[in-house]
Amino acid sequence: MTIAIIQFGGSNCDLDVLHVLEDVVGTDAELVWYKEHDLDKYEGAIIPGGFSYGDYLRAGAIASRTPIMDSIKKMADEGKPIMGICNGFQILTESGLLDGALTTNEYPKFRCEWTNLRVETNDSPFTSAFKKGEVIRIPIAHMEGNFYADEATLSKMEDNDLVAFRYVDSEGHVTEEVNPNGSQENIAGILSGNRNVMGLMPHPERASEEVLGSNDGIRMFKSMVEYISSR
Amino acid sequence: MQYRAEVTIERKSGMLDPEGTTIKRALEHLGYHTNDIKTSKRYIIDLEEESAELAETKVDEMCQKLIANPMIHNYTIDLREV
Image (cartoon, rainbow over all chains, first blue to last red; front, side, top):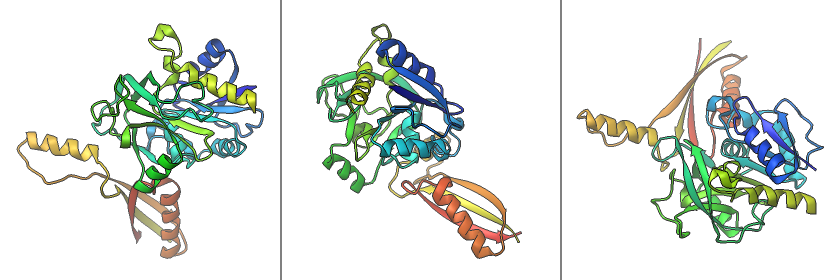
């Protein structure tokens, strides 16, 4: 079982994800340059964070229109798990694999800090190792993480249990003060309708070892590996 | 025929415009009061097509597929022959 880590010009969290998958989780992973078309041999994919194409046009817009994204869509259609982190989340919304859009933070500043997240569902290939309602610590680092969707989309996401994580205080309460970017309903991560695609702004790969201050993120990767093994 | 299209991309109404809000605040520090400031992006696209209609269709496709995000943006196309 091998997980593909997709690299675009400007990806910069690719090696961190590779390190976590190989050295911490202990699974096989490969870096895949975006010019590769055939992803059939991979059982899952991660689109890491960074600034693909310098965030030109809109964050994630140009990467989302590259041919490799057709192969990612094919993987998603086959039920393989796809996770987009930060810029990867932006690429997934721009490609239409996930609903909504990520726009400039309400206070237009690059925010790099720890956040508390509440696990909203553990019914997904990425969150099965968590307890629903659990509060975890994962850092963010972005300027365009303000999640926006229209009312109809938001209620569809609510009805189908597609919100994966929300920004909360340490007690697990959703408040305006702890919303780092103005995201609607404090949304930090979401799932696709068929639940095998997830995007999130926080960086689980930066919180996968105790020495980094938290290892809560490791369970997202472990959930993914577990899901692949059970397919 | 040669055409020039000026495409203006704006956020849909009701959406936050953090850049506009920041500029509004900065202007207030300079003593200028404004009711609201909205930002937009403009793209100038030169292209060759057989007719204005065809050129407009092409530019509209470009907006739908890449330049705008229909989820959050409205756009206008101003086309002229050059």
